[in-house]
Length: 272
Length: 272
Image (tube, rainbow over all chains, first blue to last red; front, side):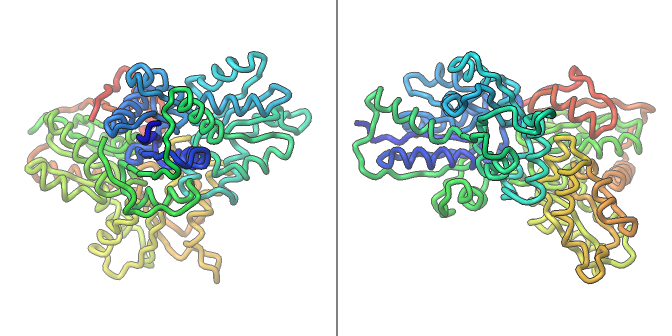
């Protein structure tokens, strides 16, 4: 039994969707969530920069004596998970790409799947690698949807701008011959994108299953804790929030993602 | 005569529109342009964070012995120009807000004007203050258009997404009674926004004059150099580019803003 908290980090507030799934799955665990809001987004930046930022965030959490690191950001998972595992051992590091790929492979029957992600995640090919490790015969279409991040942050989950952006990015998934989607499953490969789930599902219709990595990541974290004997004995854990930009904005936008209100006074501002 | 370069900084590549105007107005001057691409955008971040980043960028340029600092970013100008003037004296510091306000006031006859800017620029009220200093009777409508930054970075200057976003943000400028714009002049108060100028002009029609701060900032810089006896004696200056994220992306996206190609090898990567 280990009562230390689990450290979770993201470029901003999007990873709170992962935190919510973690808390639902493990109500006894405590969490420290770090949002690097002063330097977001990560998804349009180069791999070296993202790796450096991820290293700083993880080091900050390790200095707070967390028992595990969860990278709740697809872009940082895509470029930094192995890097952090090497540097932080024996602290276990779990990313969201492998769980996301597992959720996607479980959802497809045709083995034609799509990944919606940031340019940084798409260009590294991490999802393709993870998917082909699970389902070697899968055909993967990856689409970089940079604007979805700011749409989600603006709170424009629906309406004409969201619809036009979804159409612009997802059109390559529609077969010109049949007018139907060429895939039967799609993963939202960025923690911001679940905010646009309805708009994506409406565009693609009922024959495409849309998954994200929050639930499967929570299961992976739970399994890893059990395997290493790091589970808590508590019945009820707590959550601490850290942000590199203003606590006020973190609390305001964060509430959209975590699905409950966040008090500004519960958010500690830190520098990395 | 002073042959040292002029230091110009921005959160990213948007400020290259200002650099272009500076070079057109002063072909003999040399410039060092710093784009803080690893931490962009500034416009959705808090004033303290932006002030700290602006201070780091300016200090880096001063360490390279520049003779003047131009803040080619509206958000940083809005929150940091006085802060930097105090700290960097006697090095002169010129921002883009005052020149933008001057351009706007010169363009209006009805004294009903609009400012399109980032949330960070709008919330500080810097444009309203600058405009009322020049034209106390002006009525100012300020609109925060966060998504325009990522639209410009995505290169979506036209098309259905840009049109829908322009309509969503600019609708408050259309009088419900007459269906006509309630202003006769508008300033693009973010260096990214000139990329969307055509879409804005098409939506508002021919009776609204759209200005930006690039040209008037260049005139302000030229006047300041002359006043202080800092003009160069050279016939032809050169330009050095610095970026905090990958030089490749800076060169690629930067070309859209500066209107000419930028070689990756001409961009030096720095850490702040």
